[in-house]
Image (cartoon, rainbow, N blue to C red; front, side):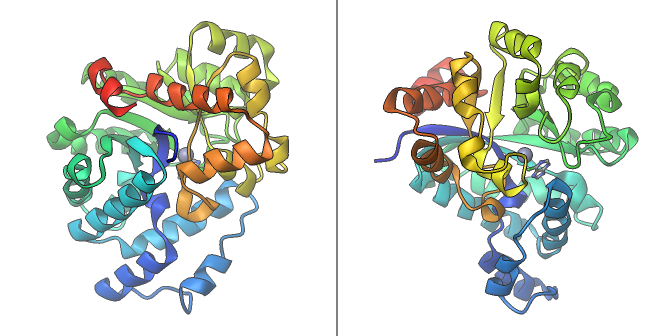
Length: 319
Ligand code: ES4
Ligand code: ZN
């Protein structure tokens, strides 16, 4: 039996497996510039975050209807459940769809068809986190939050993703303030490719309660001390870091040192269809390659629930 875990860093669009991409392309009459799923999978060779994002946005062309989003989320939830995931906090990128003429309502309603049945169908509780694309303008983020207002009963929080360097957290001060006023929880990607200063800024300017990746905090001992002191969770994604060359090899990943330092680390999959593994695969990889013992693995599993947005009673049921 896999260890029960919560997945806190998962882009639903990053769960689009090549086979499903071709199925949806055929259903929607969308042409993909690859002969078949096998040829597409061969394109999953990335030099950095941007080279991944280019393919990630290109493949989204196949997602058009509520049914597409429901099928995507349902396939993820089934795979996650099989790997021990009992709770999933799921990112989605509305701007990547509205820019293609797909309404935010289609996205949320479609995802909700799968999420609403997830506890009964898969034994996985869920939350939805709306992410703003940081390489789009602050105005676009504000418009997106406005467009999301009819769906806020289904959205737990906001996040910030896409190309990090050159798009510091401060750019999104206003939209985070507005979201906080609406009662939304706040997270942001910071310190994946961007410098440790972006982590500090995400905490101080955006008021985030959890940092996605946060890997580059290790370059700043004072920041590490603060993250430990304030018990700020980091949602690490080890296989993603290898595929996007944020670390040289998995054996070089600072996760063990980060745990030793007392950081509240969690292990997640990011974009599992692209990076070679779901949450359980990431756990297996760090156990094998980084030599983490049973006690550390249990700590990571415990951290994932502690760092989640579940209420205490829900957390006890999920663990
Ligand atoms: C992402 Cl790995 C990663 N980093 C930033 N933004 C993203 N969106 C989807 N995956
Ligand atoms: Zn991510």
